[in-house]
Image (cartoon, rainbow, N blue to C red; front, side, top):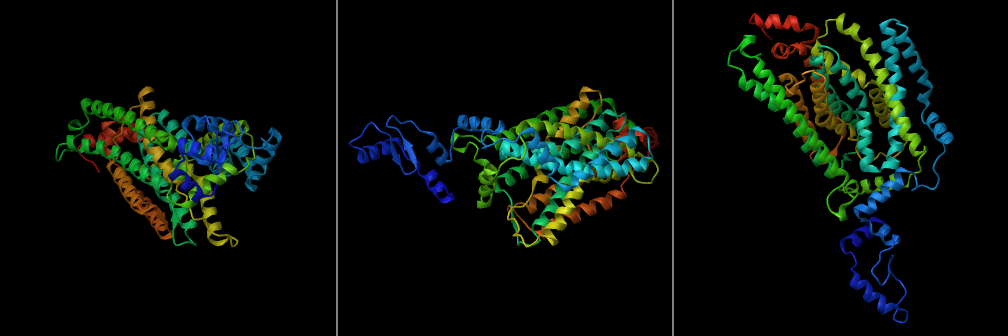
Length: 506
């Protein structure tokens, strides 16, 4: 059924009484037989068959759940690929798979204690084919999970590397300040640099590209909510600080620490509830007539075509191979990324790089290195080597979803994990970092307000990220935080505490 027929059909659904009247008029001599009305067939008892459900485009939630069960087991396709076919398709998914040998070499380099520079380079290169495989597996999972749930799983998988690295930093002693900088850095990267590259690449040959209007509005509200949850603890901290205070004893009291940790943990729980509620609304909007239609209601015909193409596409790998493959792949990526971070310690300790820049810029860029190179290659290919293919009218804004999830889901998860393992991670971040995040949120929300993007706006986002990286290079960090939460200061905590106790601070 085309879109216009569907709109007419949805706008004026046939009633049972009208169908019975039509049935009696057209089949007065055979009242016991079913009647065909247009493309919809009803029995005289009012039963609705599968043909009408398919044509109406509005299934109940129970019908949608049954359809989801069919999709996730692969019963919606003519033929489910065998294990051998799935393995072959995975191996042939990209020419970058030949570089998977570098993964083995990076592991050997780590366990045999090769030079740290060798381990760093090998681990960096190993993430590129692994990220490409992750993209392939994520796309295949969407064919079984559908657009809404598939997008959520895809976003979670793409955030998996950064989340695992953050948990590893949380478990290490006295690395909490570095962890806080990394959280902000990952969010800024996914909010500005990556979508900016996507918008530049996608809009290089179009006056503008479309964003999902309803989803964009929800994302703007969620991003603002997440940023405000980081602003409030800073306001609280400033409010309890006496004007002109320079002594650690006037600020870093046990009572203040307890208050900040208590409301941080309470806020973390509320933030989790907000994110989960938004995902429930997105996946399962209220009303039977809306069940499953949210992904198609984007205000632009291209989104409906995209959803229909997703439903019609034949998977290349079987569902259980796909899900098992993703689990194994995430584990390999996480371990390889850990070798990368461990090998970069020589940069941190043998250079003059400020720890603030190390967390805000360097670690996020390195942990995102594989996907970053793929993004850069995508930009160059779509801009200069498109082969005459028509540009796509839809903008790729999924990285913004990544930043929202990291702010409203993974950050509170880290706070609660820290509470559990006795690592007091608060929602009180460095004031400079919070201001950076507020600025990025304001720019992104303003750019996406009309649900349209162009290459100039994408270039602005990239430029803002470059400005942030430049300013952060010279920023030493707030020393008061190292005293308020001593372990946050890392290896430099004792030095910072002594400096503040003498009355000096940056």
